[in-house]
Amino acid sequence: MPLAIEILKSSYYTANQVPGNLAVVNQIRTTYGAIIKEACSSANARLESYILEALFFIESKGNPNAANGQAYGIGQLDTKTASNIPFWLKKRAKIMTDSQEAKIYQLFGNSLADCLLNLKWDNAPSKCSGTADSTNLITKQHLINPEINIWLSAMYMDFLVDKYSEGGIIGIGNPTRVRMDKIIVHYNAGQGNANKVPKALTPADTVIFVKNNISITTADYINKFIGTNGLIDSITRTL
Image (cartoon, rainbow, N blue to C red; front, side):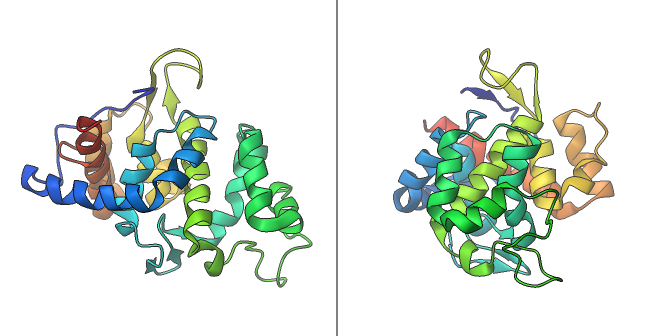
């Protein structure tokens, strides 16, 4: 595995649930595998398909029309976050690949892509803003398009893997240790909550801290993702 992801001793799923979970993962792979592979191969941070397969299982069971509050689609992105992802990848992390940039233009057209890639700050007003009080450039209709949602989710994970990697520079050395626990807190509960997690905590300790101080739901998410019998554990055992 290009990315070294620690599997926790704690768990959310039982061994008996693994076959059913993998059956859903296989459905996601069958339906969206080509898009997922293309999005991963275009990423800077050595994303692997199983990371997105796990994400889409937990977020929506692969349902492109899933909606929960203001979160939409297979990766359950909200319009505010989605509108910032290209900007974060290109201007903040400065790791957007040529393939990713070309895909933004392909998916959104020249005018909207220019606005997405050239924001001055998060959700900054631009010539593409619909109204003065709504600067979200990406809409619900964009996010229920599975190709758009998969690509934006992949770019977001690319940004987060780069942000929360330890022990080496992305792309150099093998493997790169990535703090998937912190990625999950950021993706599920936002950067503000991710910043609350003390840097010295181990992944196992992060689960306890998150459960007591942030959200039981987010703590469960970590175990679903990287716990024993979780999605990463289950999928990688079959590769």
